[in-house]
Image (cartoon, rainbow, N blue to C red; front, side, top):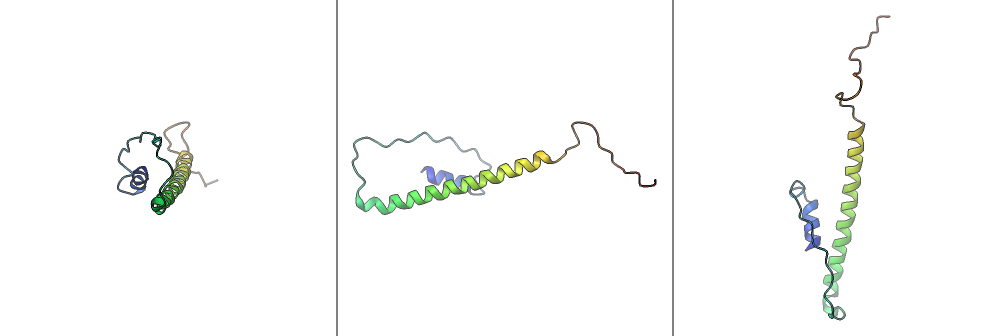
Length: 90
C-alpha cells in the first residue's frame, strides 16, 4: 500500500494534494518464512519499491536544482536598486 501511495504521489494528479504520513510498518511476529508461491509477488513489490525510491530521488534532485536556480534570480525587491538604463553617449 505504501508503494501505491508513493506511485500516486509521483503522478501529476496527486502532486498538489496533501499526502498523509504513513505509519511505520513492522512485520508481525511468528509468521515464519515466506511461502514459495508468494515469492514472485514479493519480488514484484520489491522492484516497484526500488523504482519508486529511485523516482523520488530524481524528483527531489530536480526540485533542489529548481530551488537553487530560483534563489539566484534577482527579484529587485531587496537590497540596493539596480540601474534601469545605461548611458552609452560618452
